[in-house]
Length: 484
Image (cartoon, rainbow, N blue to C red):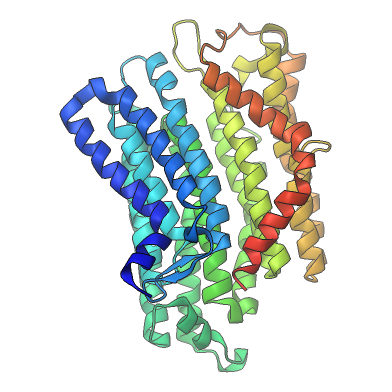
């Protein structure tokens, strides 16, 4: 394959990377006054990356001798990542304008573009080194974004914790990569799969250790138990648009990366990694549900909600089948709408001076002071709980169905039983809004864009989403089959 074709297959990443470099120069020369122009140009660049996916980048094959894969699976994940990244850029101006002490700077959208580029490389990786480069590009941008509000002690703490624990996880992942390379003799996924394609009794202990360390490093990015400890503090301390980016775009990238490594690189070792995935799934569901019950901060509650939802997504991965991977992709598509909508509502939680308010108690009686906003948040919470007829019910149904079809009936049954625990704290928020006495009112939504995104997310979850079951299922299954 010639060099021009290789570049064509990586066109979305090229668009994001070159656009970020150009906008970085514009930011340096234009200063604070260029913020608005840089932000909207960044959204246009993300749109350009989405358009670039319509070509060979969505199914053109393998680029750079197997290092990069442009297939339907990567294209599905990139659509979700780019949409979430664009919304995170759009959310930022209103948040920073209303937050005293910090102004939005033009570097913010540039960092989001670099994070999206790294996420795209992650989901298209065909080699462990490509995987690591993409993950580090995303992570380095994320560390800066987490601490973007320099004068806010919580933001500085979030960035520092994320950096320290992220460095530890990167070391664990790199150690696992080195072990796998040492015992397989290659870093290409195809070669690694060949090394694992031996009877279980003959599988090298070194390859087993490498598998464990690689999945441990990926679990940190997933925020799956027991590598979840950074999530509540980082989600609470980071600026809300950044938290939304972490909970959506980066979550999709981590899940897609885990799926590709499990199926493509270590598919023959299904029995070995399935045990790890099942443990992480059940532990994440339990901890995400139980730990959220006592939370009083809405962002910390959504952090535990993200841990809980990763557990459900991992049930689909544990199936190890095309239907299971399809269920994971469907779950993440619906999860993005639920979570992004929730954080858009959190943006509206502020006092009349514009100071953000994050306590759950401040939602008391919101159904009487802001009925439309309360209805939207109720839809998001009930959908996250998986209560029909909201679309979040379908996301849980498909992963449980995939597990049953793969012969994992006990896992599906336990997952269904544990989902009732998580429903408690979602229902508590609905109860607070509709049955408690009003604690004051939030100012009206002044941004038409934010209001429109909240409405669009709510309508997608009910009733529009139900009309998309067939096309979404067909698209996700096509994407899943490209891995097998």
